[in-house]
Length: 428
Ligand SMILES: Nc1ncnc2c1ncn2[C@@H]1O[C@H](COP(=O)(O)OP(=O)(O)OP(=O)(O)O)[C@@H](O)[C@H]1O
Image (cartoon, rainbow, N blue to C red; front, side, top):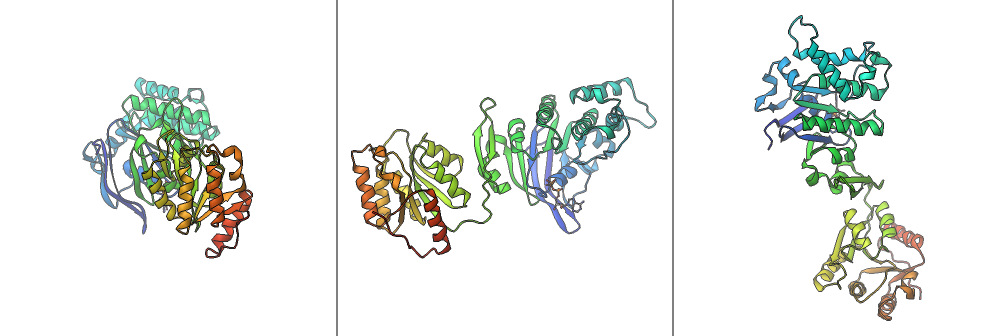
């Protein structure tokens, strides 16, 4: 556990509403932590507790091993600066005076601005690209400009610890990246940063740690490469994400798939596919909230890659290798837990033919097998007709054949409404 900033059993209530619940974590000096979580999960409250602006109901915050609330207010303000989500935005003061406010903790009573204060203010405004706004009244700035001036004010405080609550929320994409780069530079200068962000990609690209909050508790905390996973983000936000690797930062980035599954579909399917034949099916099945497992597919196959990125249960075989018995057995066990086995129109060779054998054996055990007319197209068969024989055997024993995806999904919809009724009969 880090020693610089520590939260120990930290709890806070608004009246009887628990906003932060028994939070424990610690960070090292110089960390850059992205704080993420759904709306109302307690991120802002946590930041205010870490700044010493709210007093915890239970627990304590320790800065360099010292109880934060025992530090005199001025000493605290010299060490910690906070950029708030909301600020009084109708101030008629010129921006340089707003930034100069950051110097207050460094002043003695009746002290006037020194040359050094002006130098620090100047530097902070340079760093945030706000120097040209120095004489302008704060109230007349755009939302993004105001936000940058407030960051300049925090920098003028020359803090060791910088706490920022959604500093990029009003900024266009260029300034979002600029602010994150500024924060990265500050981190390189030794400033410790905790920053509430709503964009997982900004956190993944710029922060070195992520702290995820859910319902007032820590949901996950750790290095970006350890906790920033599509599975964690999906569980946190209730949104499915596709995870990719950024081509040159080599950090993960996430694409929301806009597939939200608030109501889990009652049906589960096992998909036999390969070479990308499963992708259109996967998309539609997942959109409906149907649980899908995949296999056996070779590693590096397009369907294997898609299934892995979507965090599906997938049984794989080594690249370019025939399916081994143990993998087939594993796929069988997984498929037995599903309502249907679906066979996509896939190329068949000696290496993956065992999947059709598996489908037959699953059917013999009572599993319903669904396939497409297109599966019988000779162009898919590189086994000299063996694949077709398996497909015909499946049909003879009751597999259902569908013309297209629409008819398959009509059938699945009907089956989920009446899960016990199997009203379709196989076409020849
Ligand atoms: N001043 C307040 N009085 C009463 N309840 C509050 C107050 N501030 C926050 N809350 C409640 O406390 C909980 C946590 O709020 P908080 O603002 O810390 O969450 P957040 O994760 O920062 O949310 P957001 O992402 O929407 O900014 C929420 O349920 C919120 O409604």
